[in-house]
Amino acid sequence: MGTPLLEIRNVSLSFPGAAGGMVEILHDISLEIKEHEVVAILGPSGCGKSTLLRAIIGLEQPTKGQIFYRGQPQIGLNPSTALVFQNFALFPWLTVQENVSVGLSCLGLDEAGRSERVEQVIAAVGLAGSEEAYPKELSGGMKQRVGLARALAVQPEILCMDEPFSALDVLTSETLRNEVIEIYTRKTSPVNSILMVTHSIDEGVFMATRLVVMGAHPGIIRAVLDNPLPYPRDEHHPDFIALIQKLHTLITQVEFPVERVPPAVPSVGLMPVQSIPIVSLSSAIGLLEILENEGDLELFELTNHVDLELSQLLLVVKAAELLRWVSTPGGRVEMTSAGRQFLSSDINTRKRQLNVLLRRLYVFDVIIRMLNQSPSKEVQEGVVSSQFALHFPHERPLRLLRTVVAWARYAELFQYSATRKVFYKLQQIPSPP
Image (tube, rainbow, N blue to C red):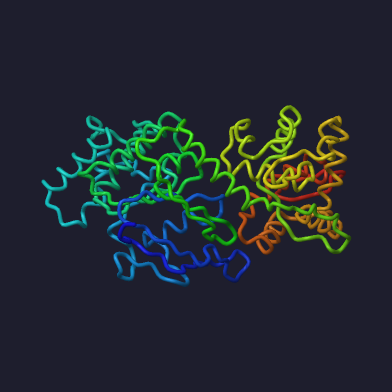
C-alpha cells in the first residue's frame, strides 16, 4: 500500500464571504498521499481542488483539522513539496536559467552546486540550449517546461501540479504529460509522488495511479478510485476506456440523481433562491440541436459530440434542464416536449417563450422587482451584484451578473448599460453618460 508521505485529517477551510460571515470552501477532507504514487484530483469548477492543493503545500491554513507530513504536524510551507502553476508564473525579467534557480537560494548550495542542479533539470525537461532566453521568447510549452524545471530543481518529494497543461495546445500537453510520467518513473528522479489537479478525466486516467473525485459547495471527497493500468498507458486500450467510462458515470451520478422529480412551477412569493449555470444560451440551444440530430444520449456519448470538458458540459446540461428543455433520468440526456417546441419555433416565438421562463427564476425576478420599485426605473449594477453575493457566496458575482445580462438580452427581459453600469426597463431609452 505504500508508506503515507502526507496525511490530511478532517480538514475544513473557510474564507470571509463578500456579504460578511464565513464561506466554507472545503469540508471534512481526509486523504493520504503515499510513497510512489500519482494522485489526480478531479471535480467541477469551484469544488476547491486548487484550494486543497494550496493547503497541502502550506499556502493556506486549515480552519479545522490538520495536515501531517511523515507523521509530523505540518506548520507553514512544506519544503518537501513544489508547485507547477497553470499560468507558468515566470519572472519576465529573468532568463530561463535564472527562473529555474529562483528557489535554490535557501537550500544551502554553493554556486557550483546551484549551477550543476540547474543544468541537470534544464536538460531533463528538454530545454538545453535555451538557458539565456527570456520568457517572451518562449512558446507556451517551453514556458511550462521552465516551470517544471524550477519545481524539480528543489528536488521535492511531492511534485504538485495545478492544471499544468490546461493552457497548452493538445499536442504540447500530450508531450508534456508523457515527459512528466517519464521523469516520475525514472529511478534517479528525486520525485517520490505526484499530486495533480485536473479538469480532464482522460488526463487523470493517463497519468494517475489513484483518482480522487470531489464534489462542490462545499468541497468534499466523493470517491477515490485506484488505477492499476501499467505505464506506458494506451489510451485506446479497453481497460483505459472502461475506467474513463466509470469515472464519467460516477461524476454524472453525483450531478444527476437516478430519479429526478421535475420542479414544479413556483407559486408567487415562493420562488426558490437559486443561481443559474455560468454558460451561454447558445451552448444550451446547441445541445438541443445535437439531441435533435442524434436522439437521446448518455452523457458519456454526448461528450463525443461537443468540444467541451465534462465539467463545462455538465453546466450546459444543467442550464437546459433549468429551462425545462431537457431531462436527465439516470444521467441520460433527453429532450423534453418544451425543448422540441422551443427548437422548432421562430426567433420571436423563442424570445417570448424564454421571457416567460426567465421570469420564474430568482436571479431575473429580483432584478425585475427592483426595477418596478425604482422611481427612476433603473438599478445600479453594484446593488444587483451585492444581492447576488449575499445569496450565492460560492459564485463570482460579476460572472453571474454577465451571464444574467446575456440571457435577459436574448429574451428581451430588461436591458443593461455597460457604460453607465445600470439595469433599466426595455422600453426605456437611457440618457447618455
